[in-house]
Length: 319
Image (cartoon, rainbow, N blue to C red; front, side, top):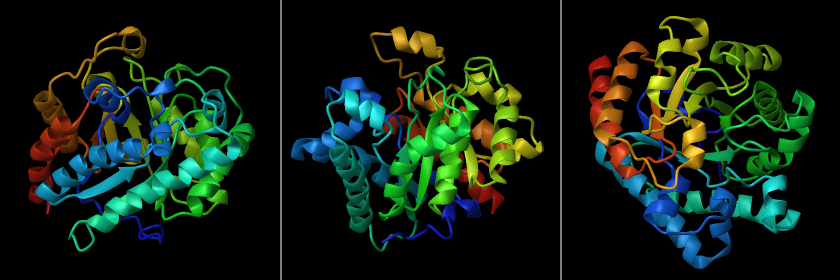
């Protein structure tokens, strides 16, 4: 049963944490092979499911320790038809995996029943193609049709919202937002940017957010930025700008490397967790509407712990 679909608690402005970089954590820290960086394949195996529970429980513990809300993001970033077909999944097997992903998170929420801070379940939708390159781009209606099956499936589960992560061109983001509107699901759109603060297509973040809002009558609950270091986008976020006010969440990399450099790297660049926490605190002070905070590639519980430690006092000060 969904808890928050009709009233997302993170919109009230309190601090909500998310997890970090699930794929990089599982591959580099846990030694688990993920074909095509697809964490959802682990749902096929009891040991894989337990690895996912262990991963998310670490973030549940951080949120509990700091008395913050938590957004549990399903491990379904690659769970769309093209990637599933490449991985040998049938359409029925893909649907089962998406349902299992939400059920796993619901089980974790049930474990924490009675806690003061809310735990929100998000159905994660990833890009059809590469997360860093806008290849084989769809138009808005093609993207709406392509992603509708996964979004509609999440609407049948206990997911509270849908989050589209690592969007690298605007038409796909519009299509997912429209698919969510069709399914009456709240949706969050998270763009990735290059080192110049622009989308991989060269479009400005401002233009991308304004285009999605214009095409969907402002349907997304809010926007996020993920899979980029704060140094890559802080300079384009002008406090007080209307489009910047729509950005509520950050899931940054701790590494300052470009997407191309990360793709070519053979070792994990985890950056400096304490520095990342300080950078989040600086952004929160400049942009007080930002209250959803986690990590992306290369980040793990150490980084989210430092983010919580650095930023939680800023929320207390605001209240």
